[in-house]
Length: 271
Image (cartoon, rainbow, N blue to C red; front, side):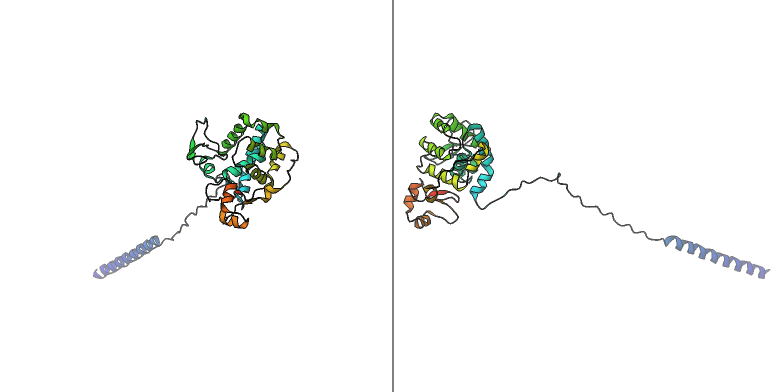
């Protein structure tokens, strides 16, 4: 009997051990699972289409401030010529001369390219030393309004009526007529305008409007007696170069100081 009990006990022990091994084996199989590595999603960079970013205007900058000025305002001058019969060449030359190619204080701070004073003006204004200290000048939001006021200034004042009896492409007659009518006190004013028109071929803008060839005045002393100010020029250096004096240059150009602006047209000798 004892032997039978011993055998039964041994059988139970063996069976119990086998069950534990199988359970342990199953447990190991469950925990030993395959690792799955997920690749992070890579977002593609967004690319703006041409319609989504601002369009920048192409600006061509030349070595000459006068050429830049002409490129900016020639269309406006031609439109004023169509509307008011004032040569575009004259308007551009006056703008270049009186605004120092758009770099003078009145042009920069007040968009006033022709030195038009307040008179009966009720709009914005700026004060600037001219014939007298702190004179009142018109101030504009855009230079094109300065061009329009220039046209109206000439068209509506009786003293300029003779100008409109001239041929519209007679820039020489217009230059001399402006001085005769009292537009400027500088006695060299006509020569300076004519010199600018011929040097930079501003008469070509008249041709675009009229559709005919402009009679170009003979290039004479107006070109030979003037100098375009470049970097480094001073009244003293110009006086030595052209065999004259600083005081004579100031007198010829109605200058109250020795300051020169690059691009200015300076008369260096009288005819």
